[in-house]
Image (cartoon, rainbow, N blue to C red; front, side, top):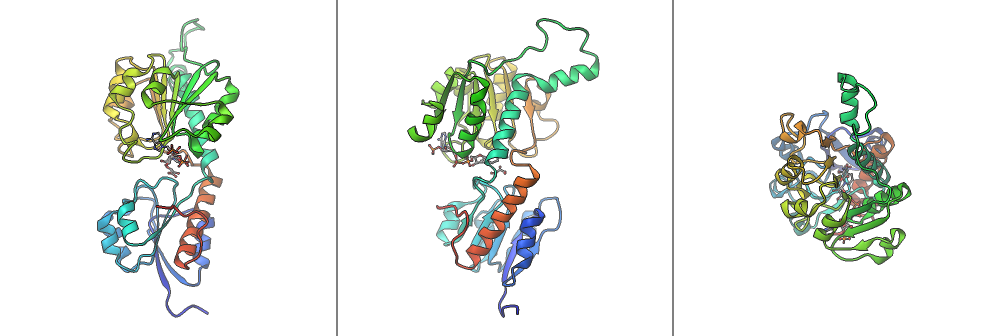
Length: 328
Ligand code: NDP
Ligand code: DGY
């Protein structure tokens, strides 16, 4: 029997089948979904959220004061299909006593795999080399042609030795990395022990690393962290990779560092804005590899994320402990 008062839930996009099925089976919820692969316009989201008890959203939805006001006092839980929560106005959400669910851990392996792929793709110049094969640039085997940089005996600097940062270091270690550095809010000797990683200030990490991988969360203290000062400290043979959020990097400063030869190359899975306009200057650079934010994009991972997000939402609505609650 259906309960007399159904809780209204809004889902801002199509989600993978396992999560969708869980929501469809919830007898105490009336679930509405933006049934398109294109993002919901913010005005439409505000309209659809009026009176909702729960929201399942993705990282491209801005959940700000305006939207929360439009939703009204019924809203009890926001479940995001992401581990990053930088698209949520946490202060406003906390003020209203709304609970937040997110999807840590289940995407760590997929994202670390992608980070390592992007690093190798960038440092060994794979897109450039493939282009040469297609366009006739491959004329013969030449000793100094298409040379890049290898991981063996290198120093790798991880910005943010969290779940994903550690999973990246774990995968890079067998490539023969000699030394790991990391930076963050404070040293984490227990986590760092696995890699004998040394805690250093961000600028020291920039100066001493051959490869830098940014894997921190986007917060007021990490916004713009990789800027002109940071790139100027880097070796001109060093490779920079960002899988965190575009706003951790000052993109204009990164562009200048790549064009001037201040650094060797960059691999970005995240940019500002997303999508990056197709005429963006970074896309014209041979030493910059850009992917469309696909860190967690394996079928299994996205399905699992949808299950966690759906269960977070349902548990939050029912006043139960969530599988993964973001504690503010
Ligand atoms: P964690 O919370 O485990 O790790 C975040 C790390 O950021 C922590 O180690 C934290 O260090 C660090 N950090 C915080 N402030 C700073 C600072 N000022 N300087 C340097 N580091 C800092 O999160 P996850 O590892 O699970 O995820 C990290 C981020 O990766 C997400 O927030 C998301 O933005 C991004 N991501 C991107 C994906 C993609 O598709 N490209 C997929 C999944 C995640 P400390 O402990 O010292 O505070
Ligand atoms: C996240 O979860 O924060 C990623 O950016 C997408 O999986």
